[in-house]
Length: 81
Image (cartoon, rainbow, N blue to C red; front, side, top):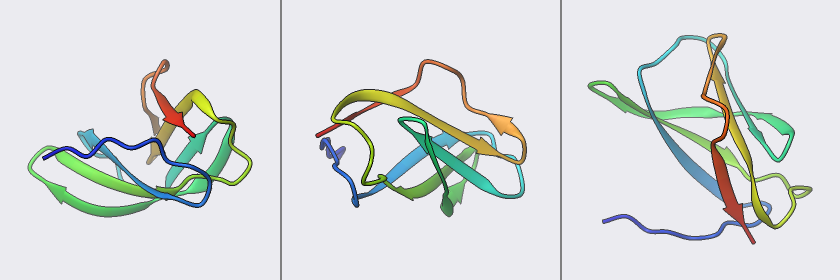
């Protein structure tokens, strides 16, 4: 089951990705960077948890993840309320 919500500032979100680097995880939402936490991993899939910053704008905003110096592709977005 997938639960779709439009998170707001202060909400913890889960971001899923494939592959996996090592080291520090940085999450950038609407240009505001923070450290993310690796919460789980399975064969070829990982989960990062991050808190939506209070200063992020409502609407569709850019979302990026950097792990071990490897960045997520450009053009990824998240819809915030």
